[in-house]
Length: 206
Image (tube, rainbow, N blue to C red):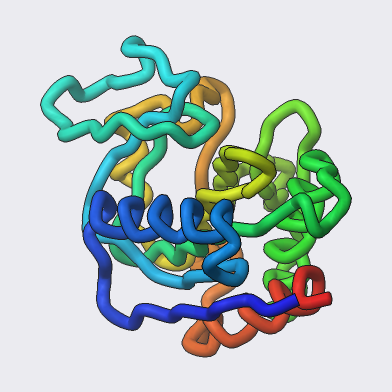
C-alpha cells in the first residue's frame, strides 16, 4: 500500500500540523489520497486529549490547547520527536487494537536498535522503560479513528527538558514518572528519523 512520507527538519507549530493532518484524513476518506506518515517536532506546547481533567493542570498559567485526540494532557517541545499518521484501517482488517499494537512495536523496535529495552503496558497506554527498578514513560500514544481512518500519533522523548512535565499530571498518571532516551543512555540519536521510518514501513507498508 502506498504511504506518503513527510519529514520536517524544523519545528512545526502544533495547530498548523493538526490542520494539515486532519485535511489529509478527509482526503483519505474521500479516496483522494494515500496513507500518510509524518516525522516532526513542535515548539513548546501543552495539549489536552478528550479524557483530560482540569485538576491535571498543576500550573494554571500554561497555555493549554484542547484537541480531539484520545488521551489526557501532555507536553510537546524541543528534544522530543513526534510522528503523526493517517492510516486507512478499512484496507487493514478494521482492527483498532491490532493497529495500536503495531504503533507500540514501531517504537519498541526503534529503541531496540539503540540497545534500549522498552515495553507496552495494557493498563497505561504508551511505551515504558525500566531503570534502577523504576518504571518510567518514554513515549506517549494518542489515536483517534474517523470512518476507519486511524490518525494522530506518538511522541518520543529524546533529550527534552523533563521539568516541563512538572506543570501537569502527564497523561493523567500521578504515580508514574516520565524520562527521556538521554537519561537512559547517552549516545548519538541523530539518525533517529531514519530508524523510525524504517520500522514504520516494516509494519505498515504491506
